[in-house]
Image (cartoon, rainbow, N blue to C red; front, side):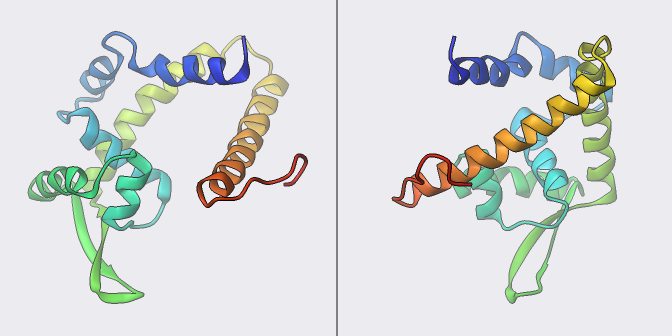
Length: 157
């Protein structure tokens, strides 16, 4: 089994059965998956994002994201803030209510990961994080190069 196959299996694990529904129920959150995905993206970014950046990270078109943002804004889960680089533009940020929702949800999911790794040694958990971080960085560099028409040579970092 190749690395791509293993990555696909890993990617689909959280979508198995009713795991999302179980996580939001346990967290006491009433949001559909795309809305929660937006909150997780905003939380991971650690700074407000443009609609286009959220759409790109979700791999969807902007209007799809905008519909969800409008609903989230009405519920005071996200807010639009001025872009310091362009006062005409708006960025999307979590409100304190939105931060509480995403914190509850990610605590549940992180708990599942921690339970799965509970029998691993501290060294193995640290090594896993180091290697996953390296893999993510290397794949991002390579895929960005391919997307812009280039192909980095083997061994380029």
